[in-house]
Image (cartoon, rainbow, N blue to C red; front, side, top):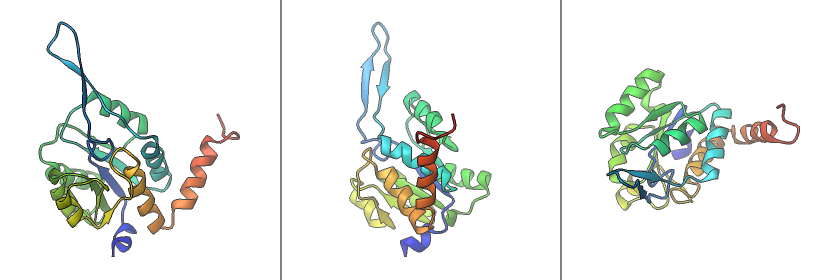
Amino acid sequence: MSKKRAKKIKLILFDVDGTLTDGKLFFIPVPSTETAIEIKGFHAHDGAGISIARLGGLKTGIITKRTSETVAIRARDLKLDVIRQGVQDKLTVLEQILKLEKISASEAAFVGDDVIDLPSMRACGLAIAVANARDEVKEEAHYITPNTGGNGAGRDAIEYILKAQGKWKKAVSEYVMERGPRAKK
């Protein structure tokens, strides 16, 4: 049933904290101010997966509650199609994105880990939970990744979709050719 859903996907959206990261937040105080620098860790497998997704014809993006310059930098680095930070109501933003992208809800996937992600997951054609998601999230997911958030779960989700669509091998081959020793510089 979930592979049938995955075949229709044109857009995959991710939560960030706990999904594309392991959920830990690190704050380094800036001396003589009341501010801090926020640090997060992102897995290279997820980054490669997002590049492969693009080659496979998927649009990619994030919808996250927190606002972080670290996330903005990573999103620009990965050339995400959709970047929405500081979102309290992820469902409303999801609906706006679908309208803007001219994509039906059945053609979108949402990857999350916590209860704040449930409304978006419920609205999408393919709801994906990371392996360490809260039980309530796993119960409503169509697919659960083998890896945990921040440890390749994003790549798992992309791979699942592209394999269901029969596009995985070609996209990986293109990715390798773009970055291999004979790639045009």
